Amino acid sequence: MPKDFLAKAADEYDVIVIGSGLAGLTTANILGRHGHRVLLLEQHYKLGGLATWFRRPGGHIFDISLHGFPAGMIKSCKRYWNDDISDRIVQLKNVRFENPMFSLTTTFNRKDFTKLLTEQFAVEQSAVEGFFDTARSMNFYDDQTTTTRQLFDRFFPGREDVIRLLMEPITYANGSTLEDPALTYGIVFSNFMSKGVFIYEGGTEDLIGRMQKELKKNNVDICINCPVDKINVKNGQVESVEVHNRTIRTKSVISNSNLRSTIFNMVGSEHFDPSFVEEAEAVRLNNSSTQVYMAMKPGVEIDESCGDLLFTSTAPLFRTEALLSRDITSRTFSFYYPRTRPEGKRRYAVVSSTNARWEDWSGLSETQYEASKQELIETTVAALDKFVPNVREKIDWVEAATPRTFNHYTRHQLGASFGTKFEGLAVSRKLPEQIGGLYHAGSVGIIMSGWLGAINYGVIVANDVDQRLMKQEAAPA
Ligand SMILES: Cc1cc2nc3c(=O)[nH]c(=O)nc-3n(C[C@H](O)[C@H](O)[C@H](O)COP(=O)(O)OP(=O)(O)OC[C@H]3O[C@@H](n4cnc5c(N)ncnc54)[C@H](O)[C@@H]3O)c2cc1C
Image (cartoon, rainbow, N blue to C red; front, top):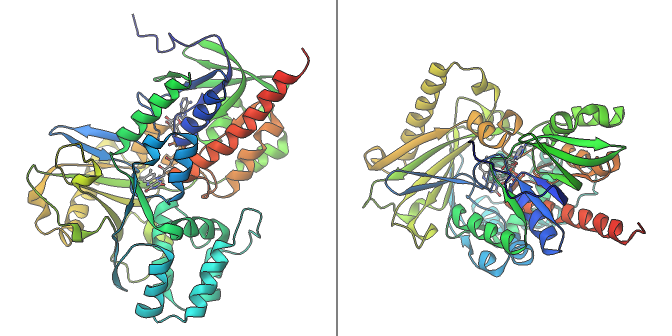
């Protein structure tokens, strides 16, 4: 008999969370902690969504999205998870850039960037301070018509090198471009600049394992291998979800699945106002990624002077178009030294990440696809060889992921790595106005994506749902 993955699920819950990305996990944890009955349904066989990892023979473990996040993660994890998790967050001190315009290593915070910009790039102190202050003062409700390019042009006209330094890591961190609203750049950049780039020591598997433990402590029922097919709506309110031929009743649904899939596939556009459907249809998905995972043979060491994060490019100028092109010129290498997993084997691994487009990979035949992946691996190993000499002979395991891989494991349309573009945020926030009890928490709008953005968005939505449930409980029967 096939395994019943829903065996422990009850017939009714206060809240059903669909998807266990960092936003889904966080909403489930907060609502469970508040005493609500919560069911977390994940279609994959493990929790974490894009915050994930995989193992390969020889004791190798690869992280998919553990490359760096702002210091704000410490506070968010402490408050909404526990000290065990927040205490393991540590700074990455060597962020390195190598491109035709400049070579440098930085701690990636305001103090060091100010020094670099004034001394190495010879920018006026007043322009640097003005830029930092403007970026830091940006918030959600600001004007959205100014683009990031206009922001840069205001403070650093004609300085393509400065734009590259300021923009390249953020494009990598959340897929934003020079054409996106400046506030999406300003908020994310300032988050990083406050203290630098941080990482979770112990690896993604340790983090997700601890989160799972905390969820259990807070009585959240967790069912993996459970893809939700449908969210049922009655009289303008969510009523239940359908999963594995079971209908589970609920007062609220929080979807951590892709925003567009939530609206158009799981609910159905017939349940929303036509003007809302129009707005939702206009939401653009963010780009996807390719990655190459390279693990070193036992005994091979990589010198820490390579850096923790290495932004490389062979393109003469910084251009969004070039970053997304199938003809790869920019790669970000994440170096995993034994300190990443102090309790693991003394292994070194490198993961190369590059922004990519779904359409460059989706239509390939299986043979073309395999050949393209092989080419991606070959060119990436050759690129890494400039920084780790003879790396080809040092590699024990190598493989690649493409937009198709991300789509397969998370169901994100077009394999989107960072959810939707900025307009997705307003649509996500309006869902409960359209259908009572329907919420979305997950990567939208650049600011609410990435590890910290996803967790913080989960917190916001958990508070909304908590308030609704409290009101319902207080209402006379
Ligand atoms: C290559 C790459 C590198 C990255 N690097 C970084 C980085 O260095 N720093 C950083 O901060 N961020 C990084 N990110 C982004 C970050 O990982 C994501 O923004 C964040 O993890 C997304 O969390 P989320 O809550 O939106 O959900 P997701 O992680 O998108 O998870 C959604 C979950 O919903 C599940 N699901 C979908 N549909 C259903 C359904 N019908 N039923 C049940 N379950 C369903 C999926 O299986 C998945 O588990 C990177 C992403 C990628 C792809």
